[in-house]
Length: 453
Image (tube, rainbow, N blue to C red):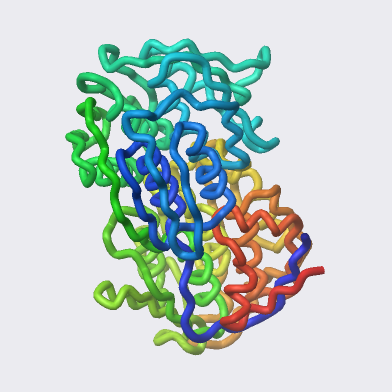
């Protein structure tokens, strides 16, 4: 599907879906819990549906109705996956479930779609081998699925791994509840640390004893926990909040985003302070769970975004803790007067696609000036208006045909850029359903002119 984004302004109230990260954790923990769990406001995205379909392989069963999913946990009857685990396009499911599967005696096979069969799993294989499993990549000279694992792993062994990708570390933390003794995880280069905190809070809420050192290099999870069923409401997804947020700031818009999560369990909420630092008119009311966003003429400062008030006149954002925000931040950086440096992004080369290379290539098609390094992006941007509110002749971005590379975050970010530029056509835009089902329809109800070509 090709989507054409035309110039538009946004207004009214919008609510983004529930958190993918919370939904997948909820499903997997409910599947090994004793009793029936209720998950309200789950994200019905492709990744979460893949997880929903996978948990019966562990012995659980589940029912789905709009706005609420019910999981009948396998509890003490949880078992080795009864079939090949096909994770679809979900790296989260792959990295979370593989350590859990490895707690059982016997072989498990993990595979997925073409994208998953390109994503690295060598770090998973190495970590599980340290814990006593047999683990192999089936294809000679490959570094990705299919992957086969023979458990059980044991907390008698500690594991040392870099931890630059957080998901398999969270998977080991969840798996630890099914082991005897305490699992010790040593991380040499921890990244995406807010997600480790999210996993810790989930486990602690279910009775687990978890400790994480201040530098996130030492994690200990006490095993032997019999998880009890739970009822939870999934908070809104900050990764999804980013798209209407940036779209409103670069257009003549006044938009209220409802149901915004203020619990601090999602590192991506840092995007608010980042954008406020360059003059973005954003008001976060945590009591009402709303973000009020105003762009261009609707904003208090006329919508002028600039790095001039920052140290050395540059915006530096370390994204180690919330790397999934790179796509949204790279797009809006093109509309900020001055230089933006997005740093510590090495993990982004191992996501659904190499997001550093892809953003460099596709933003240049739109007229942006971008530099790429091994683990950083530099964007030399221009505000659409000058400080006095007049048109900025230095702003030269324009519409173009762009590729999504089947990466949902790339697709949504580029489509949002099109609402300011007009004439941006995004190829393979249906991939947005991975994390934001009906993205174009939801945005359209608030004025976004997206049309299928």
